[in-house]
Image (cartoon, rainbow, N blue to C red; front, top):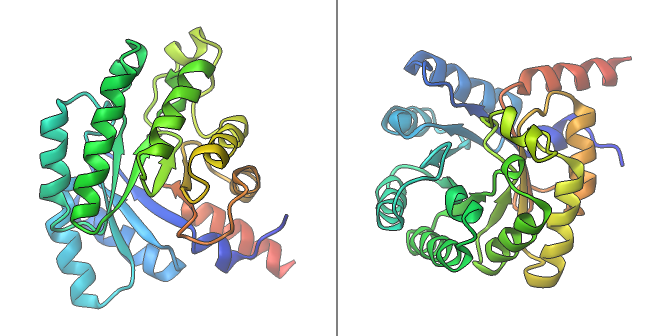
Length: 248
């Protein structure tokens, strides 16, 4: 299916997650998201105070999305709960990495308990929560179990990855980094069984309109920001591509 510029831009969480991003970079990110018609900016918590004040001062409709325990998902559950509760005071939405090390250790009961507590904490603070499953690091069997857990947790979104994956380990288990159509199709299949209402967010390696379109189609979600999101740092490139297409 084909989509217009306004529709695609309305699905984007415009991302600025580099460790060296300054407040000026975050200001530019927010200004671009407002100009482009993006739903949110995705930022590190260190910038939350600045971003909240800047968005509120300018009365922008752009939501502020904080990434937590990023990119490893390696903290104790109690600490992760505290992070959700603390940053929910400034952020509108939260993206948090699933406990990948526990997944790889086969401790799915602990994974389930962890994610349930995080979702409960976010919803108690009336915040949207997206759980990052870091597809590049998991086998098909692990994906099936983890996707089921996230769907059953009542999280608002299941998200493909951080975009910060190493390349060597995924290659060793036959995986690619970045958002992959086959993984999004599997998410949609598992969601059909356990939570048809969950949204899907794709992130990592999305550089073209074609990338975004193919992933959206694979999700079997409507092209609305409550059901599908695109995490992208190269939003301008995708926008310019669509502008050129529409003018030709």
